[in-house]
Structure formats: C-alpha cells, structure tokens
Image (cartoon, rainbow, N blue to C red; front, top):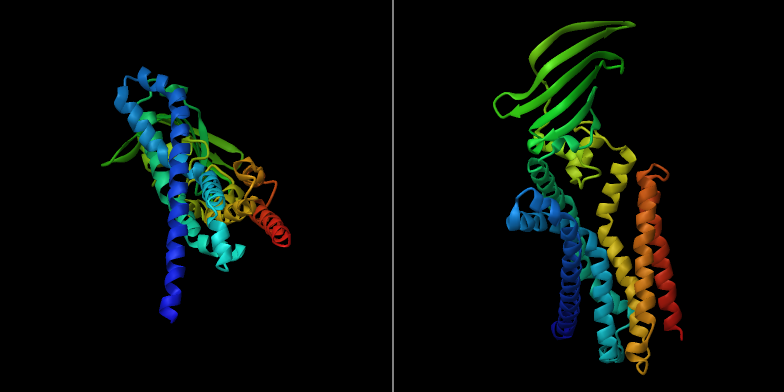
Length: 364
C-alpha cells in the first residue's frame, strides 16, 4: 500500500519539476539571448576595430554568457514559474489537483526541489564559472587592446604594502608606472619604490625596470641611486592584476575569503566582500521567495482566462523584490548597512507578504 500510494507523488513531483525546469531554461535562454544582442551592439565596433573578426565576436559572446546567465537567473525563475502556473490554471490542471486534495502549500512543496536545484546551480555558476569566464574575458580584452595606456589606474593593498599601477597591458603581463609603498608591522612607511614599468616571466617572476627608491627613517628621507632592473618580491600573478584593474569583478568564495583574511590583494571594502558572499549563498532562498510570489497565479478565476491581471501583479511584485534586493545590496556595498541587513530583510518581508496574499485567497 505504501509503495502504490507513493507512486502518484513521485509522478507528480517529476511532472511539476520538469514543467518548471523546462520553462525556466527557456526563459533563461531568451533573456540571455536578448542581453547578448545588447552587449554585442555595444562591443561589436571595438571588436572589429581590433581586427578580431567574427571569431572575436563569438569569443566575446561565449565568455560573456555565464555572467549574463547569472544575472538573468532570478527573472528567469519568476517568469518561468508564472508561465507554468498560468498555463496549468487555465488548463484546469490546478483545479484537478485541488479536487485530488492538493493544497496550495502542498503544490509549493512539490516545486521546492526543482527550485533548489536551480538555486544551487546558480551558486556554482556565480562562485566558479562566472569568475573564471570574466577573468578570461578581461585578460583577452586587455591583451588585444591597441591602446592600453587609456586604461585606468588602480590601488591595492597586499599585506604590509600598498601599490599603485598606472595601467596593465599584454593580458596583465606588463605593468606601467608602478609605485610600491612598503610599511613595517606597525604601519609606518619604510620605503618607496617607483618603477617606469614591470614585466612578468615564468622563469624570473616580476621584474621592475628603471627603479627609483626612497627610504624613510622617522622624518628623514634618503634617495637611493636608480637601478636599471630589480626583482619584485610578490606572489601576484598577471591574472590577479587583471582582476584588480577591473571594477567590481565577480569573485569566487575562496578569493573573497582570502581577501578578507589578508592573504590576497584587495581594493574593495570588507563590507562589500561580506555582503557579496552572503548574497551568493542565499541565492536558493531568493528563488524560493520568487516562487512564492508567483504562486497566487493559481487563483485566476476560470472565466477570466488570459484577461486576468493576477500574473501582472505577481510579475510586478517579483520585480519589486529584485529591485529592493539590489538597492539594499548597493547600500551594503557602500558601507551604509551591515552585510546581514543588506541581504536578509528583503527575503523576510516579501516572504511574509506573499504568504499573507496566499492566506487571504485561501479564505475567500
């Protein structure tokens, strides 16, 4: 008896999961395609000016796709869930499930596994795939840049050193206008190095060229003779300079933890890193909230059909949730809110709001 009674549940779980997954994948493909077209409209001219041709356009699109997919995932889940629930409601499938004794929250329970699969896939995409693809894209873009001198300068701290780089070229293998400020354990300045350029080889590591140096002892400064070449004792690799030169690039969790613990160079605040890490691992919970927001679609009156405004209100609520999350995250990045306050309250508020709407509809 237990085996026969569990069979319909497995069939229903499989049916609902596949229905949700297929629609989310379809919506994600459409959204990523549209975003790719918009990105290529902006970047096709620079790519062709670099004489990269069709292969360059395809390379840009392929390396950009994971980043676009990660950004489009919440909206894909929202629209995919709305499509599935609306179609099931208009086809009287929801009415049949209700007649069989399936409650609204029972339906939600059946949709949770597929949503969590999408959420954890999004975590892997954000944490492993997107940082690598964006790193490869930034290195390729820098290596093919005919005018790297137009790149912006940047600062970063690496242990007890603070460094300033004028610009990078050759995919991060060459640096220009390098200033290194060396401090002691108490933070007092000990030495300043200025090099016109630096390059990287796998055999010698980093080599500074045309180096001027100044030593600082208390209030006394001493200028040392210029040196033609000098080794740079740093563990940084070219790809790390590409990462540092980019503005807020996607980072893996291991990189974020290394930056928070001072093992890796960083040019962002700890609050920004902590908020990003917390938001990433709350991605499955965010998708569950979006699924809950889409659930009132099952209350579309049968005679209203496609003229109902319920899906529109659900879509607007989901977009509002995404916007509020983005605003709070921006405030967390700016240091105006603690990381936990910048990520968790929106989840709680919109979950309670969606549950309230569902309960009101249940009591009608």
